[in-house]
Amino acid sequence: MKNEKTYLPLYKSEKLPELTNDEQTEYQKIKERIIQYNINEERTNLKKEEIKQLLNTNTNNQKIVNKILNDLQGYGEIDKLLSDDNLEEIMIIGNDKPIYVYHRKHGMMITDIQLKDREIRQIIEKIANNVQRKIDKQTPILDARLPDGSRVNATIPPVSADGPTLTIRKFKKDPYTVIDLIKSNTMSSQLASFLWIVIEGLNVRPSNIIIAGGTGSGKTTTLNTLTTFIPPYERIITIEDTLEMQIPHDHIIRTETRPPNIENKGEITMNLLLKNSLRQRPDRIIVGEVRSSEAITLFSALNTGHSGMGTLHANSTNETITRLTNPPMNVPNIMINSINFIIMQNRIYNAHIGTTRRITEVAEVVGMEMGHVQLNKIFQYDAANDTITYTAINCNAINKIAQLKGIKYTDVMHEMDNRKKYLEKISKKNNLNIHEVQTYIDKYYN
Ligand SMILES: Nc1ncnc2c1ncn2[C@@H]1O[C@H](COP(=O)(O)OP(=O)(O)O)[C@@H](O)[C@H]1O
Ligand SMILES: [Mg+2]
Image (cartoon, rainbow, N blue to C red; front, side, top):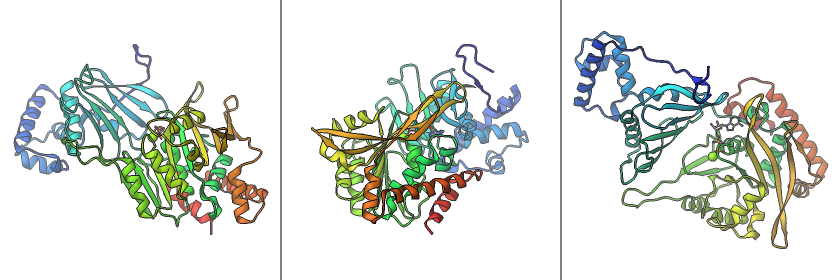
């Protein structure tokens, strides 16, 4: 079914049964009492029986109790959207306008839920309260995280002229694995086996990697799946603006930045966290998204022998270099060499299968010539066949690994082929979660 005005498919939510007029009155009375009892956030896990006792009500009306429970726990009307793991994004744009959602399979959809400004404000304030922050005329923008890890951005007037808005990037409970990405053709098994070799580095030379792409192209997701290839004995430190990574690794420290408080104090920047991580003896540093001055700290660290991976917003490999070497990142050209590969990721619309995510290029940073960073294409995507192929005649990273291990280039390529077959074997199993995939990968080394 499609919406007539927007031509978008309709997302039908499960509705709580409508209350009759009498029930509505009873419901309102109970709500008033709840407000008097001043039930706050710490008490949001009330049980049905508790509510009845607390309210001193004899209502046996399940409909009313359910509606009260729904109001108290979580975020009311949008809870059912929050609990649907098929939704990537929930978008509320204002008074009496339908809520939009972005569905994993169907893309943008329009829901049958509409909220009043007042109700949207209530949800926003509840979210702000939960993270001890404020949203008001002075600070009309809120960036926060829900307890389940979902990322929230809220705005109120005057920044959003027509009323409060809420955009929720939902946290996937069961994160994608490298096997999922192979199965959905985001990457080929050959590409995965290549990345396995260069990330793990056959114990002698782990590669440093930037994953670049547009917003929502799946950079963070790809980064998360690729951490599977970090050997189990390594120590990982992650640095993020909001915790998104879900890495099933034993030895890991996760860190998160903090915005300044209302007095403009106490800000913890990525740069600070990154500098601090260098005193924590990391084997791998994972930076969620490289945006500004932390870039130079990261590149200095990579230049002095640390290994790292991160994502960056850019639309091509060349733009990645341009963004890195210009304000606000300002990485000196000469330091760009410390990354080995740029992986380009894209969100592509396909008329037959809908929205897809594809790795469209892997480029190796091979050096400098006349002041320009030189790139060598290793993998190239072909849109006509929807395939990505190994196009390199020679790959520096593979050469280096062979050299350091005292083996031949072809030996490394042979190992890559073994790993490709191993990944294909695992891919035959169904519904492996990220822990199970990790176990299979770790087993390979024994
Ligand atoms: N390879 C993929 N296949 C299907 N969905 C994906 C894939 N990668 C990401 N997604 C979904 O797309 C959304 C955006 O992904 P994310 O990795 O956060 O993108 P980015 O970091 O580029 O902004 C998420 O909801 C995620 O689940
Ligand atoms: Mg991201």
